[in-house]
Length: 174
Image 1 (tube, helix red, strand yellow):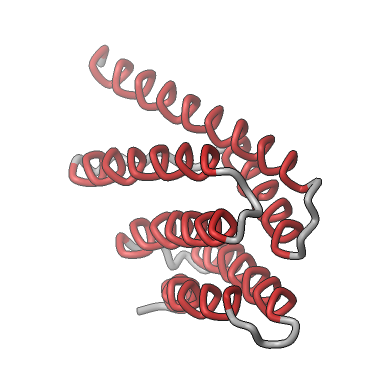
Image 2 (image 1 turned 90 degrees about the vertical axis):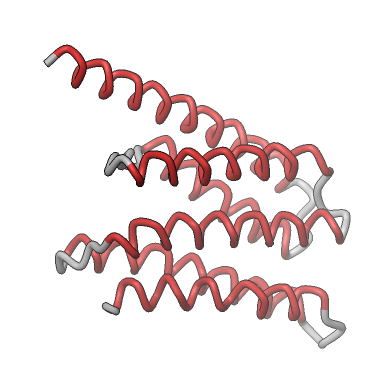
C-alpha cells in the first residue's frame, strides 16, 4: 500500500471521528469538526497529487479515493441535516447521485473504463468544501454556496455521462 492510498484510508477513518466530535458537547466541538474536515480535504488533495506526481496510481486507489469522497460528503451532509443546518432535499439529491455514481462506477470498473474527473467536478468539490466548512461554523448564508455546489455537481454528473456516451460511441465507430 503506497502513501497516496494510506492518505485515502486516513480520510475514511476521519469520518467517524468527525461525526463523534461534531455531535459532542465538548467545548469548541464545531471548531474541532471544522479542523477535521479541513484535514480530510487536505488528504483528498494530497492523495491525488502524490499519486499523479510519483506515478502511484493503483486500482485500489482508483476505487477507494472516490468512495472516500462520497462517504465523507454524505456523512457530513447527513450530520448537517441532523443538526438542522441544511434542509433534507440537498442531502437526498446527493445521496441519490452518489449511489448512482457508485453503481455506475462499479459497472464501468468491471469493464476497465474510467471516467476522469473534470474541471466542473473539481470546482463543485471545492465549493462543497467551502460551503460545508462555513456551515460547520454555523454561517447560515453558506447554504447558498451549498446550492451552487449541488448544481455544479449535477452538471458534472451530466458531463461525465456525455463523456461516457461520446467515448463508447467513438470506440464502436472504430
